[in-house]
Image (cartoon, rainbow, N blue to C red; front, side, top):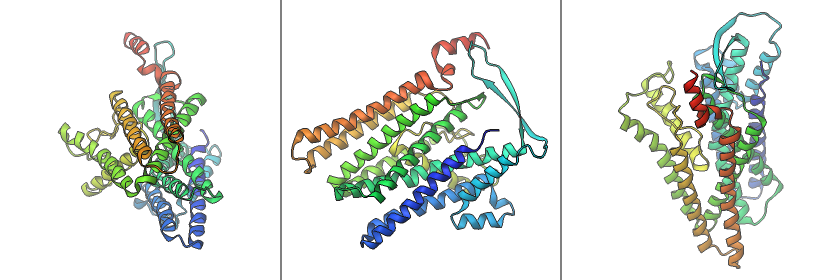
Length: 392
């Protein structure tokens, strides 16, 4: 059994960002900046509550008699307690012999055109650790794109207006960016595990590096573009963000309506029809929030039982990045026209070019990942796919 390192990383980022945001809000309070303090607290406490609800939902604590755990979640201490519980289960593994809970059959990634099935016995303790990993993976995505992303945009906008970056603000911005990149990384891993559920998938260090560079450049340039646009056109950034959010929120529902599929019933057995509708709306809202800042790495398919499209659809990410590049270019051009900070047009043009080059650089690292470093590249590359069809 692997140690739950991903759980520790998620909790560390959550704790660090919450602490930095609370300290910065105190700084804003002392300086009399109530609006900045209120927005900073909003982008800290609201995602914290959503993280608690996500962990409670995945672990199904409402159907279990665990009042102490629910109380700790109400006190916003749930992630820390869950992390300690995961490491306690991992540390106690092997001391007491236990029967396995289930048998899983996974195919190994083919190396010579033939895939081999491997049978694994999953014990009760390992199953609990796997549940913890899955819960924190989803909580990391919620924290990243419903909290860290708007927090980073807000603090960058404040720094843009002040023409200075304080230590407190810089610390929060760095932690928020790391949280967003980690959340995007979890999106990529979740997409791979869902699409290739029949295979035993292991990410290589080069794949992690490519994803980190790809997501870092993509998200940082996107945030910079939004901040620059809002610095000259003010509240016009709200219609742009709301239009993106509404478009990505409605897109899965439009596809679901056109498919003519029945309403999903097997999302969660304990949910009623109203509860299922609320869960699907929250899922599509999270999908839209991710799409504002980066490619979500998955195609949301409400007509599918897994809610995720398993098909290799390269047209959708291609269309996404083309439209996003056009949008970023348009926002940068509007900033260039209305900006008054740079009196020399060459300086402003150089900054705009750097942002566009940074975004193109993120696409290059994405292509490197899918062509050379993706753990399942042998399953979708043309030459390997032909070999698999000839050797079933």
